Amino acid sequence: SQQGEEDPQALSIQEGENATMNCSYKTSINNLQWYRQNSGRGLVHLILIRSNEREKHSGRLRVTLDTSKKSSSLLITASRAADTASYFCATEPYSSASKIIFGSGTRLSIRP
Amino acid sequence: ETGVTQSPTHLIKTRGQQVTLRCSSQSGHNTVSWYQQALGQGPQFIFQYYREEENGRGNFPPRFSGLQFPNYSSELNVNALELDDSALYLCASSLGQGAIQETQYFGPGTRLLVL
Image 1: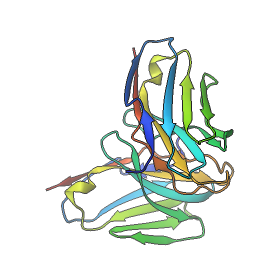
Image 2: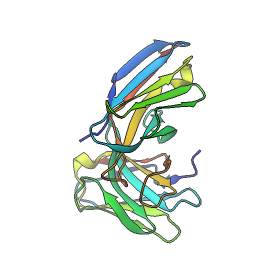
Image 3: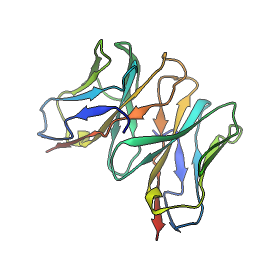
Image 4: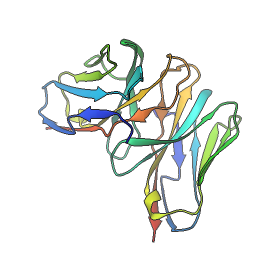
C-alpha cells in the first residue's frame, strides 16, 4: 500500500499562477522527497527535506514538512508550461530506512 | 540527464516467460533501487542493493530477483511473467550506506508489456 497520498490527484491552473500540492503519510519518517515525472519517463528529484526540517526552498519551489500532522506541501510559484508533469512525494520510513515509498501522485497541467 | 541508464527501453514478452532488465548506475554510486510503476500509479519499491547485497525488499514475490555487480551495475530478473507485470520498471542509484537515504537518481525506465 502507498505510504504517501497526494492531494489533489489532478490540478489545472493558468500559467503564472501558483500550484500547491499536498502529501500525507502514515508512519514516522527519516525524510521526505518530492519528484517530478514527465509523461511516463524517469523521475527527476526536486527536493529532499529531513524530518528535523520544517521548510526548504529551491528556486521556484517551496516545501514544508509538518511531522506532527504527517504532511508535506509543495508550492510551485509563477508556474510555467514546462511545469506540466506528475509530482510525487516519497517517504523513507524510520522503521525501514532502505525503503522509499511513493504516493500516487498529482498530475499538474499548466494552461497557456 | 542523471547518468543512470537502463536497457532495453521497451520490451514485449508473453506470459510465463522470463525477463532481465539492466541498469547502469551513476558513477560513484554504490546503491541501486528498483521500482515498478503501473500506469497512473506511483512507483512501488521492489528491492534495493547496497554493495552487491540485498538491503531491503518490498512486497514482491520471489520470482522478482536481482543482482548488483562489482561495478555497481544491476539486473532485475522476473520469472514466470504474469499479465500484471506489465509496467514501467525504474532503477535509481544513490550514494548510501543502507541507512538514511541520500538523493536517488532515476534512469529513464524500461517499459515491459506482457501479452
